[in-house]
Length: 451
Image (cartoon, rainbow, N blue to C red; front, side, top):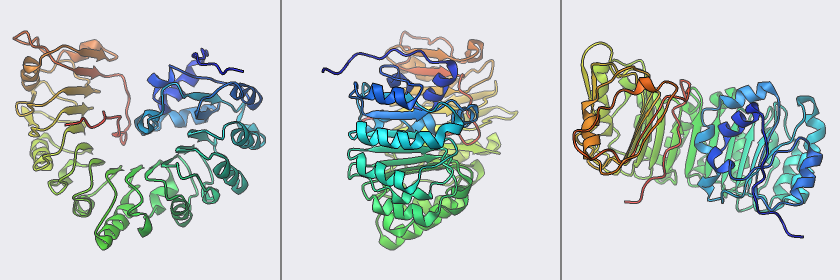
C-alpha cells in the first residue's frame, strides 16, 4: 500500500487556527496538516501517513486563552529550527473535552508508541493534567528517534524524571507547567545528556525555584527563561559555575529580567561564548556589553526610561560589539516631549528591529552609520506621523525594492518620505498588527547571516 504524499486539506474553525498559529510556524504548517476529532480517528489516520511531527491540542476555551498568550510560542516552537522538512507536519486536535483527559491519555501514549515510533517532534498539551511515571517511561522507550519535545500546561511535571529519551533528543521546552522540583528537573536533564537546547516559560514554581546544576554547564548550549524574575537564581548559579569551570558551552541566552549586577555576571562569565542574547531590563541599568566579544544577535526590552538617557545608554550598550549583526529593541517611549535623535552606532548591523517604540513627531532616527543594513522592521509603531530623517537616508541608499505594510491602520505609517533618488529600500517590513505583552520581547529573528 502506497502512502499519500499530497497535502491534507482540513477546514478548521477560527479558534483552532489561532491556537495552531500561536504555537507553530504557520507558514510551514499551511503546507501539510491533519486535524482529527478523536484518538480513534487519529489512529486510523496515522496508519496511512509517514509524517514525523506531531502537535496535540484540544478545544478547552481556557487552554485556548492561555496558549494564545504564550509570548515565546511563535519565536521558538519552530520546527524549521531543527531542519525538519515542511511536509513532515501532522497536527492532531485529539481531545474531545477537558474531562476526558485521563481516559484519553493512555490511548494517546499507546498510539504514539505503537504507530509513530519514528516520531521526531512532539508537542503535547496536558490541559492542566499530567502524565504518569509509567506513561513517561513508555514514551521515552518507544520514541527512539525523538529530537524535539515540548510540554504545555502540565500540572505535575515531576514525573518527567522517569522519561529517558533517545540520543537524538536535543531540544526540550515547557510552557506554563507547575510543581516542578528543581532537583528532579536537573536529574531529568542529566539523564538525557543529549539535550542541549532548553526553554522554560511561565510557571510560578519555576520563577522561584529554578536552579542550574553544575554538571549542566557544558551540556546546554541554548537556554531560554521567560517569565518575570524567572532567571534570577539561575543566572547566579550559572555564572558562578562557569567561573569555577572556566568554560561554558552556552551560546544562546534568553532571560526575562536582569539587573545591572546580573548583566555584569553574564558578561563576565560568558564573555567569549555568548552569541545570541535577549533580555528585559530597565534602560537606566543597561551597561556596556563590550565584554561579549562573540555577540552576534541582541534583543532587549526596557521600560521606565526617559529619552534623555536612552540614546546615551544605547550607544554605551552596543559599543565595542564588532560581531553584532542583528539588533532588536523594544521600548515604550523613545521621546517624551523634546526633540530627540536616536543614533544607533553599530556599523556591522545587518538586521534592525524597533518594537513598540512610540516615537514622537519630534523624534528622528539616525541610521547614518549603518552602512551594511539590509533589513529594517518597525513593529507596533502606532504614531500618526513620523519624519525619520535617518530612515530616509537609509532608503535613499538601498538598491532594490521590497516594502511590506501589514498593519491595522495603514495611516499610522506615514513615516517614510519618498526617496529623492531612484534607489528605494531592499527590504522594509512595517507592521502594527501584533499585540505583544510587557515581557513578550522574544521575537522570531532571522538566522544570523553568513558573513
